[in-house]
Image: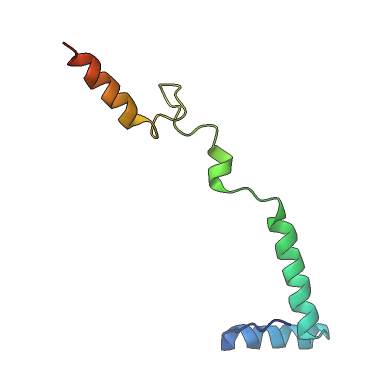
Length: 82
């Protein structure tokens, strides 16, 4: 069992549609939910769409933004090594 809160305008629109089509509200909501879930089942996130491109511009180093502190310490140690 599921309870859904609709705005008054959403409920009025749903009522008009159901009355026009001769369908119960529960059937319309179930079908709408099934369509929504099917549509979004194979959807990928924006991150997944560009994951292979992040962090490799110019340098070719994929984890450059994650390991910058380590690389900076290494550069400073090499520069100031006596």
